[in-house]
Image 1 (cartoon, rainbow, N blue to C red):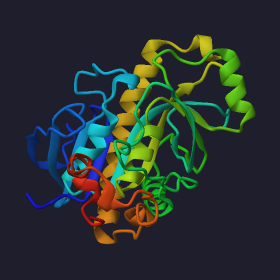
Image 2: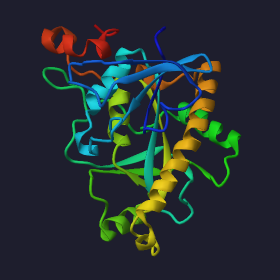
Image 3: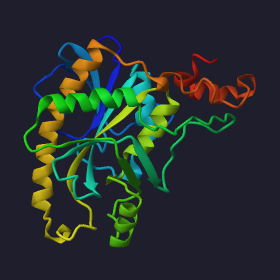
Length: 290
């Protein structure tokens, strides 16, 4: 199979989608250890894609346990230039309803127990992250959602995603605080992916799928596990349609992304002084600068 340029990170609904053809599973090892699971290669409308189940196919990894570095590094090894990351989220705004979709343009980092950089060990780089999502890829993704007119789904373009550590959900005081910050949604994974994807010079955008309101909402205690699971299933079905349409649009007109040159002025260390072991470890990311 030719090198794939589109990577998809998400839950178990996607690799079972009927539209995915020529399916092949591959195992990849990276200098940062093993990724979450095998990678599922295939084609959507003849376009090569690679899919990774973020928490593993058995959903056995907590958000804090996710091997974020290995996941993103492996996608880079596979030639990925665009990452679409589907993720379940809670809503922090009354107008952002369960089953709605959000394509956020900002993140707030509330994590504390995870590695969110490839650098160190003799090399320092500071990427620009003021705009943490590729605006051009996000537009393609949002346009795809809008074009489908999905029943019961409202699209929200832009918004702030609070990324918390988990696995426990927020306290009510925390939830009220995030609301006061004008954040739209809350999740446990995507900010770390976005940081590493930027360091690896891949365009990144999130398709956030709302399952329920966070605990600030007066009706939150009436939410049952059954309701959330039903919403997860509906979101998985809807997200498959969105991913397929987004892949079609990227394939037809790949957006030019500033993320693809994010390291150009970010590396502070003279590369001649970087230990060879570190250069070897980061070769997939640094090759065009070495």
